[in-house]
Image 1 (cartoon, rainbow, N blue to C red):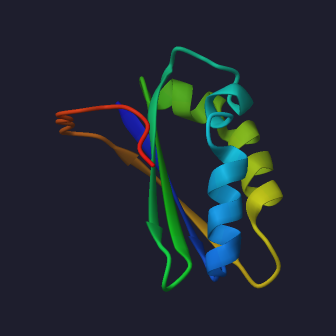
Image 2: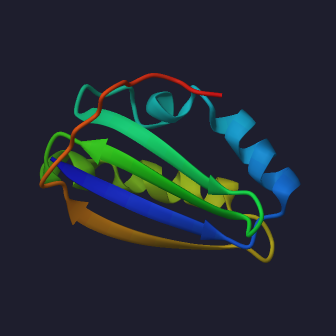
Length: 103
């Protein structure tokens, strides 16, 4: 399994809420609703405006195949004064007790 970790920095608390509401439930659709996408995790620090999005992919090939869609999505959600950085990682351990939507 592989992951793409995107860190957005510099958002206001209002834009954090707006970004989460706008993208809630549509992220898999934007990546083509592929079964190769195994999950997504949104982590938020409302005080600093940092958002980390980690998408999980069946394998490196699936992650690479999603790069164009991921780039478009980053460009759409990154506002003025915000930055986005990306890392691609191999998942060596994943243990999830409960999966689902929170909030």
